[in-house]
Amino acid sequence: MRVAAILLAAGVGRRFSATTASPVAKQYLTLGGRPIIRHAADALSPHVDLLQPVGDTAALAEALHGLDTLPPVAGGASRQESVRAGLEALDRLPASERPDLVLVHDGARPYVPTEVTRAVIAALTSHPGAIPAVRVADTLKRGHGGVITATVPRDDLYRAQTPQGFRFALLRDLHRGAAATDATDDAALLEMAGHTVALVAGSEDNIKLTYEEDLMRLERLIGPTLLPRTGIGYDVHAFAENRPLIICGITVPHDRGLAGHSDADVGIHALCDAIYGALAEGDIGRHFPPSQNEWKDADSARFLIHAGQRIRDRGGMLVNADVTLICERPKIGPHSEAMRQRLADLLEVDIDRISVKATTSERLGFTGREEGIACTASATILVP
Image 1 (cartoon, rainbow, N blue to C red):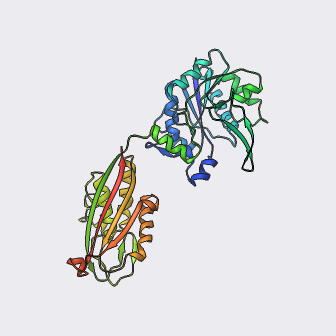
Image 2: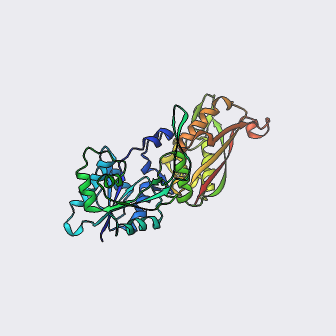
Image 3: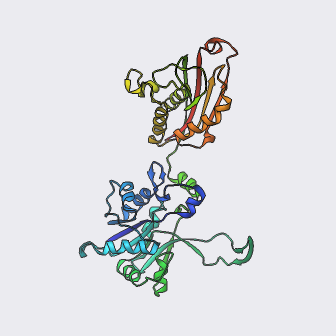
């Protein structure tokens, strides 16, 4: 029996976007270093002969690059239209290549245990359709206006999952004749036509990404074990005439700036060294040598963007960063929130992961004599 899978990725995930304000469709979010849709495709691939992606063709081609799939086809305005588009694409294959069985799977379900997919396919030997499902364990309530209106008996109730499996020709024909039906899943089409659909054991781990908390559960299932690392950075620059004073990406009013090959942003330089140290990737001079004219008077924001990207390239995340500026003047307090926000933006993290504070050296040493500014920084990251 030749088996195909239709991988659905045309949805916009309104419920997920409403809770996270994410500009990225949920199926293309990165999980464990790969797009969620890629995890779903990888879970199906060992069990099928053909994989037909449906959705944004350009985004799918990028997310599934290197995986053996049929060319992606555009999805429709509804789930049913997208499934139909996948079925028609499969039906256009030469007769010898068309599938006998077809699985339909939500691209937002990245973690499908092998036994679930095998059970669905096995059930199709004796049924025209089969779906994985999990018994409802919780008491169900019907409510309106914030109060309970009824208790719903949970006997014989199941939560349907995907991949759902069907005889290919049957599902194709039902979709062609169901133009006015807005089915929420494909099993409903078989039910309405009087066909039996088998129930096989689903899995509580077969989570559909719907809300932000689902993403955290999936990260625990799929994400690699992350280990904490801490790096420490230190930098110092002398004051110089006729230069702007730039600290942590913010131009601070002062009668002098700082001397250096780049813009001499002492805060960003120390923080970069802390991040590179946590990654065991040397220091800022290794990545941006001061001997190269390319970095003369350069905006240090470029350095911190690079450091943040190195964390992501390693499959890690920044837990927090703490920057301490040491100087008598200027006063850092009035600018610290703007500095925090600028660093957070450059590192693509929430501001609550960034601390910027200042202290003096009680008029001792070169900072006490106002000859320059020193900075210490620490960064804690999680990496596989």
